[in-house]
Image (cartoon, rainbow, N blue to C red):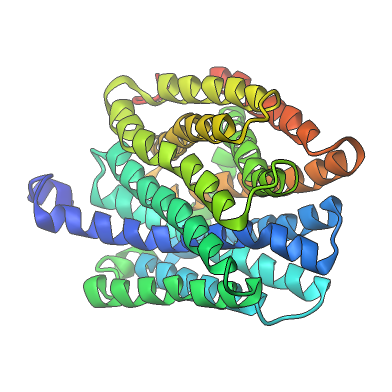
Length: 402
């Protein structure tokens, strides 16, 4: 019997683990959002071209690619979901702190790859944990999980931007790394680090595991879904990398104003995410994903015509509303499509495809920006989210998918 079957959905014992895991998810995003806000200052001080700056961001996604499948396998075969989440928090804190210490471009790339690894190993463990906890309300649990990610993404740029008015980007990185340490301490004190069913999960035969994975990964339907999610993340990753650069270099915003603008992006997501997750539980995943990605396409194109900073920030907030509304719904849709014994591994496979495509966005965007200006990057990103829209129409339906 699941906890959801034994306890009322609205009970404190049911909701507390969801809130705690989601809060710690916010800490992982605080760490990554701090890096993105520091990127313009790092780029200027190190004398990097847009292509080299894009390579730094790509290093983050390359780390994600390396870690994704092993992380999912570790979760499915050991059941150590809480322990893996703790490792993610502490590794992310260490990586952000080291950004402010290491010297040299190659060392920075290596540290950013480590940051990507830490961010990646969180998701299969946390998503599996919440899906097992609330199997009948996955859209809700993924929405709360994503909501706290938006909160971390929104608060960190403001705090880091304010710090940059007084401190170097190195010291700002070191101080913001504390978010991961605090998150790990909260998780250990409230939830511990051992999963009750870890022993049961270890008894899954390895041969059966690989047979099931192989069958599902040969499915065209599965790959149409992975690519849809991948192109959506490619757009999101490209925007997170190049919006701060555009705000700083083209619109001449201060670091604090830039932090406010990036907070506006996340604020839109904070409003939309819970509603989108709950709505997808009621009407299906596909309609919500299509509406969000179609609106994202339109707004990214509109951004190329706007030069007034106030109007631009307003449009950024609308962009966040629609772009982030789709994130928990895509994750819930993937869970709907996955056998329970392969849930973490298939989630990791999806995140691997997302990371591969997202790693290309900064490189392609950097080359475009060096040759044609930053504005050209936004046309490219509008095309990637349009492709995601088309792929969404090709995904076969599930119980919750249409």
